[in-house]
Image (cartoon, rainbow, N blue to C red; front, side, top):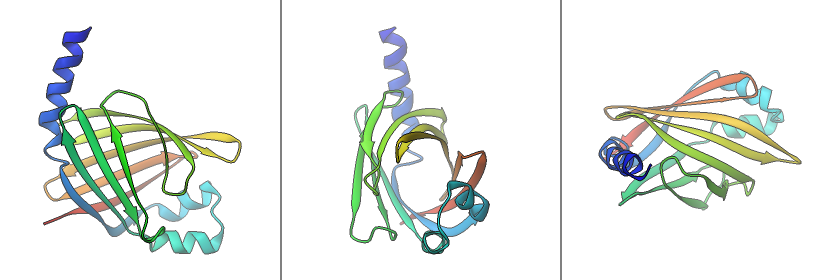
Length: 156
């Protein structure tokens, strides 16, 4: 019970160190076209999204993680997400759509997120993995029967 949770929390704090800092998209995307098409993005939005760069900043305070997200798709908007490992988070995306999410630690350099996004009248399932290797993070997103990956670099 509680002791196991406390241990997980301590481990999560140590492992977080690899993620702490500011990350920016490199523009390197794999399988973007197929993924965006499966999402049903109209051609004009698809082109705008292809050129989009996200910036993510991770921080940790005790048992709580923060993730500041900004995107050139929504200029001037920044969203701060606050969450605890393994606990439900209910919030909204930069686009205002409701999201439900649970983040888990896979290893000292990988976190996994099970996310549901409300689009129209239904909830869509997304599986997101973020893996750090030095100053490079690879983000893999699976949804709509497709998988896309992108790379981020740690800003100094």
